[in-house]
Image: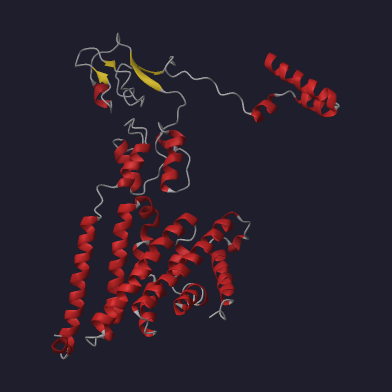
Length: 191
Length: 224
């Protein structure tokens, strides 16, 4: 039980995928201009990451390792991720057309979110079990959601703030992300 | 089974990836049937917000084609009959900034109008019948035409084609059915309506006379 808690704290705060390992920066900058959109993106990514971590573990340990085909793991993980994302896209299109429209191109682009592939590859590197892999993916997703929502709330405030002209828009966004990353380094001694 | 395949690495790789592809293809195929979307629901929602005058002032042949165009990324400020309220409602739905009405497509009018054909002057050319998007004009060739008031959306499209200019756009008269009380003025409006002297006078006077002064002000307002 304790090791599960350690995995969660480690992935959410200490080794946060966005701010510490710098994975998944594209949606982090791309969909963070509005809080509502960011929450939708966070939900979709959480679903995809957890499911992809679980199914890539299954593919790796039940098909690739018995057949001695571990050199195929990158391409098969990409296949798994693409399928999960496509499934999520169909599900959202049916259940929430508005969210589907708002997320737009960023929904299929979860496929190329390197955090998703990063989670799958780190799972095999760290020799996690099925439960650990799923929890690792879920923790990574919660960490991603946390910083995405915090960042988008800040960007909503920044949009109306009196920012000097050369720093307006993406520039102040990058600076903010850098400061958040520095702040998250404070967690490094936690686990 | 595994041993036989594992001894031949290349067929093993092909079988593994091919098998995965078939399984995932089956899952996606099932999902495509299960989560099939009938039409585009967002188009329905936009169409519902448009005024359904079918006037074509937006440049599309009706409200539904315009709704489809909006769903495909057209601007939302091309609907004069709907006016700013419709633009705000669609902007709210699509989660975008509300632009102001595009003057190119016509101006928003406050008064609802209906077409009226001066029947003495009508020559029965049927051109207005062809122009009407909602079939609100009755008549036949070389016979006088007339407008079904309850069907007319007031879109102006029949005025232009009439060769003898016998169509007027008349404001809809308010009857008992749609008459409403005027809203009472808000507190802010009441204060603004007060004469400036009254406000200064109430501030300057003592508490005892303050009430009376306000009362006078109110009376003066009512008299005015």
